[in-house]
Length: 372
Image (cartoon, rainbow, N blue to C red; front, side, top):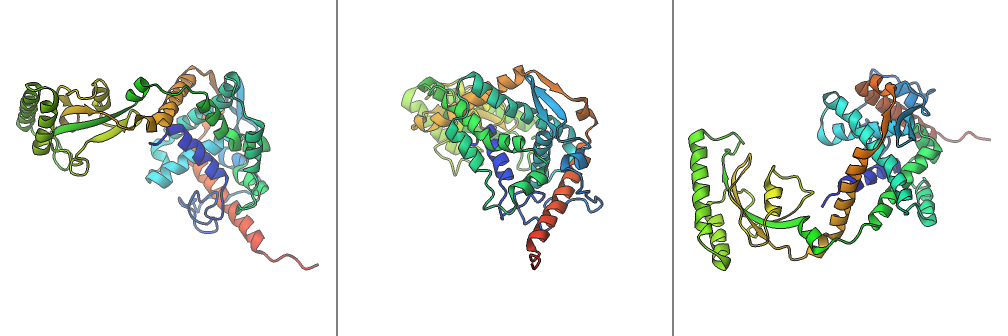
């Protein structure tokens, strides 16, 4: 199961520790000497005499853009996360930054807040970085196998030594907070993961267009009739009848490949009402008719045979939920400079600068050394 925050933290580390497989400006794919993906605007001529933060955002790298519970976050870190958010939007989803500029800025503020909270809470809860973790974080900044030197990476991101160290260590704070989470009980696990079968009578066609009112009414009547058949039975007879009706009437397109049902966790993104209805059932119980945007469902909750295999995911979910609350409770002060930040221009100029500087570094490394 995917975990929201750890995935983001890992991505940040991977982005920082770029190797020969990719380059800064180009993102995780392509050599920076080639055209970056997404391409920088050919109309932008990067002024490499400036720091990337100054060139792309008109700010000094030391400018404080966000304060989280009294801790100041400087522009170099904030711009790194803002660019990362924009890059993923474009490269992974093919969506122009202009479509979600305000969201990208809000997400960067949220990331900034979360990453500031992690070390604060680790210190507060008695699980700061160990000496070994600090040493490991510093060792990860050894760019021996990287396409660029440490100083070159600093220039490509416009970051200070302190900011580079912060990003290199951030995963450890999360790991430490996760390590002090209590092991989930069986009840915790049953409230986190569930096995379910369902009978689906669709109220949309194969192109996801809604059926007419008469067809929808017929589906509802059929769902009610199937539920009545099930309610007339108990125990094993009811369970056997459910399988019989599911095979005969369910219009779930995934039924053929999942005849024994599905295993989901509350972290999975499902149609509204599905997870809530399933978790309200005990194993072996059948739901009332549930209406969703797909149609009418009748759910049968089964039993997850290997609950303990979800223990780590459940602990991470508990921590993520706690972090959501920390985020909500945090005292976050934003600099007025953020109101004037043009996210689209920032992204294009940041990418153009990185591409130009990366190409310069590569050109310099390819040039033969002067003869003595």
